Length: 262
Image (cartoon, rainbow, N blue to C red):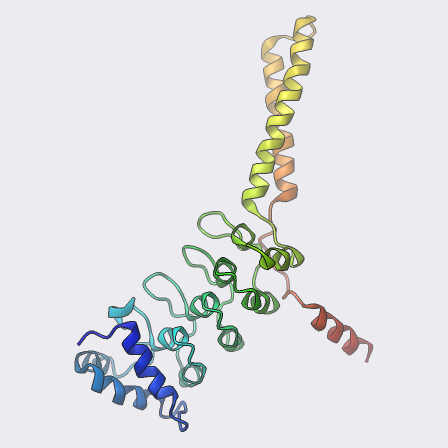
């Protein structure tokens, strides 16, 4: 029997409901329920020695941790982590458990994963967990990720920062954290270069008409000045992709100031 995500949700939810669940019995409890649902997948897992990081290929090459996070089951997530689950394991799409938590508004699980060392800036095709949280309009998760040190100007494989995907309240949150847009910086650089080229070309045309300079020189002047202005504009506006320290909320800043005074 093939196990769909809904089957896994049902299976893991029944495990989660067990009040005696702990790191010492989480694998055994999952084993027992999996054996009832699918002997085939139970036996395949058994061949791995019931490896906690075993990859289930029928649902996107995910691990138990991916599944627990996807189902928003914090107690199973904690038990698996305490048992030794790899928090940075990737699925078939290169997504980690933190990507799953970020896109699904599971901010408490986001905190758990980062607390135990999950890579907050781990990259996937479409970006980091922050890219995902922003794309799915998860404002509270965005704030948590920034507080935990996520790079507000991380660039994905498409050359986009989180701000390029932002809508509504997330725009303000990212801007306060120093977020910038590569796309907007590039476009403004091009616009500045074009405007400068037109202006310098007009001036060069006058100089050429009066015999002050020759056409080749005029063309060279236009090109050099336009490129210089466009490049300078882009460099001023482009995001700083380095992150030195976590972004602090107003409350955290006040607490930090109070502790220094004390």
